[in-house]
Image 1 (cartoon, one colour):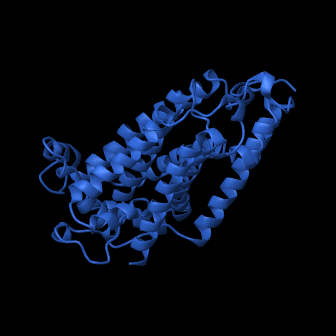
Image 2: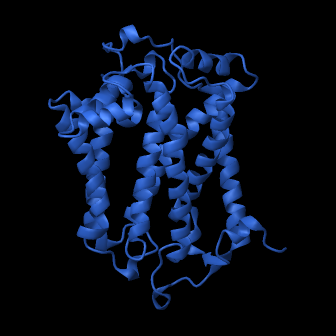
Image 3: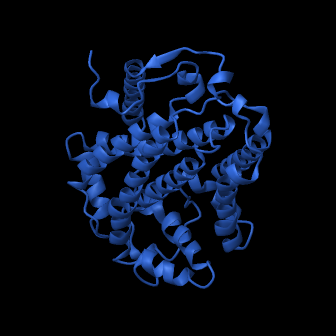
Amino acid sequence: MPPNFFHHLHPPTIPSAQARWRYTLGAGGIAIFLMLVLVVTGTLEMFYYIPTPAEAALSIQTITYLVPFGGLIRNIHFWSAQLLIVVSIVHLIRIIFTGAYIPPRRFNYLLGLALFVSSILLNFTGYILRWDTGIQWALIVGTNLIKTIPFFGNNLYLILIGGTEPGSSTLIRFYAWHIFGLMIVSAILIGWHAFRVRRDGGIALPPPSLRTDPNRISRFELVRRETLAMILIFASLLILSIFSPAPIAPPISFSVLQSIPETASAPWFFLWVQQMLKWGDPFLWGVVVPVLVLLILVLIPYIFPKPLESELGRWFPKSNYFAQIVLCVIVFIVLILTLIANVH
């Protein structure tokens, strides 16, 4: 059987040991598949979504309840976005816990982090596009954090919101960022990231002289496994979408934008930030601390001990225990804060 276009996207063969699910978790490929699902379902939603304050929430209701299969498409879009964040986190954890960020993969590690941040921002802007009472915390508190940045925070806020406070131009700004700005950036990053994976030699491996398993699998077997993963993921999305619909709430009005009800909550991926904001200074806890967390992740390949080449291709190499411990501490703190915020 001659290779087709999809086969040519993969190397002719890859090491069998590092191609196992228990090593890769399939996270990178699943993330790309979820992005494709988001593009397709998001494009279908654009035919009915109206990005104006008066019509946005109503058009969401029209998609959900009146358009044939509209509710299912919206639910798939919603759950794909949530799973993308989860899978991206799993992928990041896998990269650090296997030491797969050493040169020449260090730059691609940074591209992956940039793609992770853009995915979060896409999720956040898509969350705002609902324009219902469920997005009040994100719209008011989330955007007001930008004002706390010294020197240029107010100018950034004006660019993002389109005025000194949320108004008629705010929604179209978020729509433009979501559809054109962030999607274009994400598409470039995905292509660049995938290209660098191939250019940097594919899966991180020890030198040939130190490999204990010489077996390899063909690109045909790899595509077969990826196809199976896509089928399973899409089936999971369908089940979630049928039995757990995406959130929907009454339309928001400008008269209530200046106050936040006690029940208002951040999106789940920002609940840890919401909890920290209760401790005091919004700039410190809402801007500085998240940026420091991101900075620590960025610096892992540069300031922590480099994993030994002989320990690549397997989980938990001893030579990068320090990076693993730091990541565990970060994940543990974020999870605890998220759970506390969710309970309260």
